[in-house]
Image 1 (cartoon, rainbow, N blue to C red):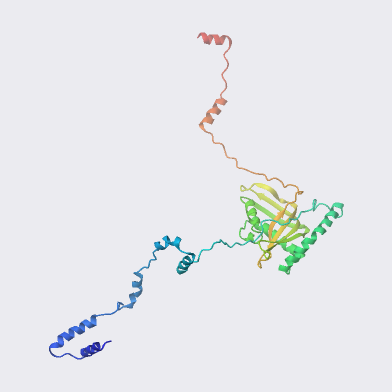
Image 2: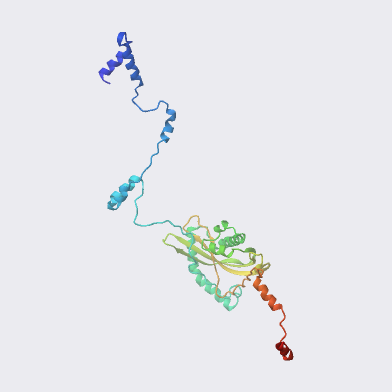
Length: 336
């Protein structure tokens, strides 16, 4: 503040006397009304005044025109200024593989399994072949134990049977969400497709033979650390199955008659995944197994709607034919 201003303010503090009193008072009034800032005296409406103004980021068309002439460093600097990530020359999309697309090294069931006794020559030959193929399965089981320390083939077959029963119960009840915990993503669409517009009655009665682990294999996918394990379990059980169509007519099986079923079921687990589960993956159907009973297809018979043309044709067919005119009667008619 300058010295003259200070003196002038001090001069205003004294009460003017004489003829200069009105002039000094008028100048003092003008000084009080002058404000050097634009702030409103009431701060309560500050938020409302702020909302009156909307900032709009308009596109810079000049930058778009000159983008082709810019270097890579300049483009990267502009994108960094706007908070955008620079483009990359490659495309990477994360994906997760929870199961394989099929069976690797599928188990080949011996012909006549479940019917030939091990005492006979063919049964003894099957036992010897099974022991020869058991070496690779033992190595695969050892690989599985490196990821799952508590894995035991004798205990696992009981767990596999529980998974098998639970998966079939959920398939019959058509529980789309819960069944995904017991079947892999490969088997899920096949199960859903086979249960459309059908009512399934399935029941597990008993095991004719204890379940047995007959085959085990391990393989890596994409990388050496991403390992999957597959185990084939032989089930010889007694079941009840009845399938009804959408009209409630029986298509296959019976709810009263129980049948013996021999199946080779493949279970799979993502061993590299810490939270992986053993799930039903696929069933092996040998070539020598007899074909299944054909499904009786039903259809709805709709009544035929008769039109005017069909009615006229039926009436013409029902009228008797006129007698033929021959002999003298014909001559009389001709002369008439």
